[in-house]
Image 1 (cartoon, rainbow, N blue to C red):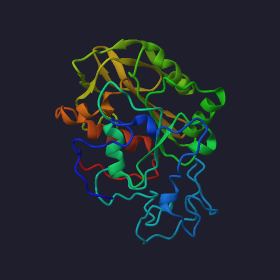
Image 2: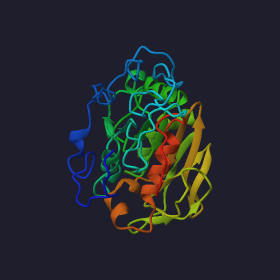
Image 3: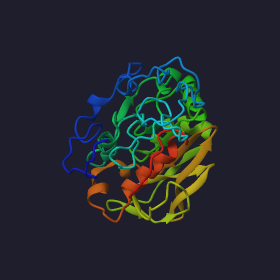
Image 4: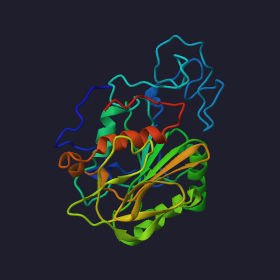
Length: 307
């Protein structure tokens, strides 16, 4: 992994800030295969015909006796119980992590630092699935999926079922909200329905430009976090653990669903440039590191967070 600064001001961001629509793939199209950049192994690897799975459909091949260096090949090379735990730059993001985004970045703030930040730290960055049709085959390679602005995309029963099955098999889903009028909740709530977590109907916590969320409960996602900004989001209701509250509203819930995990955040400003560059009092990088680590399967791609 490359050692890079936390942020580079003026980034030409990969999914946001400039021509976001150019990054979105059409409905039913083919995304670039994120596994191709990781290569394959004689033992089966991510593509292979070897034995042993993580319970989520990915075939990791036979386990060696250990002693070799860990590389991104879907095998626990050093036999420490964690597959692909590689972080050469020590930045807290696994080099082998396979992440995707759904929808498009928001337009209320400039840029999409989340995507650029992740691209700098993961060897294959984040794959933009846009409005592609959700199928088991499309979702299967990914360990973590972040849903952004889904206002323009209605999901079928089959797509909802495919995402639910992916989560229950070990996938980690994080959703964001706050991109538009209250009807924006419809599509994301449809995807979330099988998890028991939803967004409420009323907008909350208007800021100028953002209001800090300061009430955090003990949870892996909140470790080292005391403030993160929101602006005109939605309360997160339903099942799961309440991780963050502000002004009497629940703004973050975490829930385990089968072998997978769901993290529902009540705003979208955590992806915008201003929150990373103009608010040193916010612990946004630590928040994202915690979130991605928690969403990633416990026996895959787990690396230390050193900040």
